[in-house]
Length: 259
Ligand code: ADP
Image 1 (tube, rainbow, N blue to C red):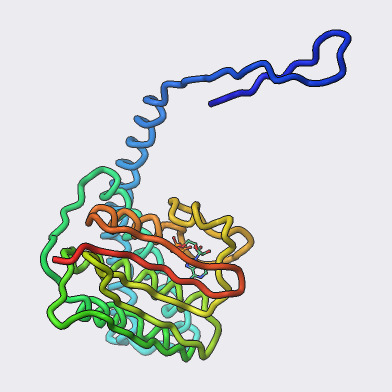
Image 2 (image 1 turned 180 degrees about the vertical axis):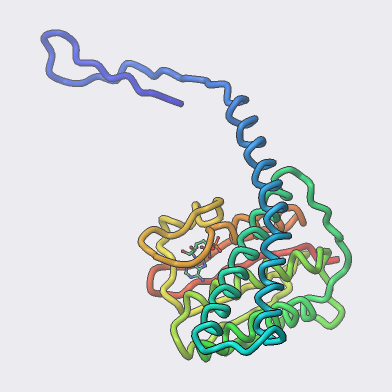
């Protein structure tokens, strides 16, 4: 921490800068606490997964009406229990992902991957979500046949899914999302552009921090998706970023080395 020292000498009116004090603080205890918290989160989210899955399974059994007919109100209740259960599972999954990257307990399976196959897998996962808002997704490939990236297929598709579901969430009805894959020297760049409300430049640095959500928005979510994405991409020796301005839509991109 750098503290500038300004004084007003006796009998004078003007403030004068006379130097600065540099404070060095040992943050080891904070780092240790942070590490302990990460481990705690990992344990909790792991332990929660089993009972939540059991709740969801129970709901599904009831929904099948094997144990008796359900009236409309009961069906509605089961539907919302199922949705809340899914949301809890998603959140615990994200917390577990994050803590695994932070503790270094993540195993990447890096192999040559086809960019087209990864994009197609990601699109498939969010098709239903896009349909609900009548959003179309178009793809543009500027790569050679046979171009492959050195990546972990599942983790990279996870990042693309996160970009795509954010793009859908922040787009208006009936809009189009563009997915571009381009060869840039020794990397392949994947970018996802939406025409939604965009993100003010002043938040671009924080957007990849854990738990950060743009203030003033009441959304579902944890603020963890982009933090996990950054970790996944950087662990794969890639680069991640955003280009966006308010009311101009957003482009989220990442680049991975060519195999
Ligand atoms: P979550 O979506 O769970 O809140 P993320 O880490 O995925 O968490 O995103 C962090 C924040 O960044 C979001 O809360 C949202 O405010 C903003 N954001 C992400 N993607 C977009 C986008 N495509 N358009 C506008 N804002 C976005």
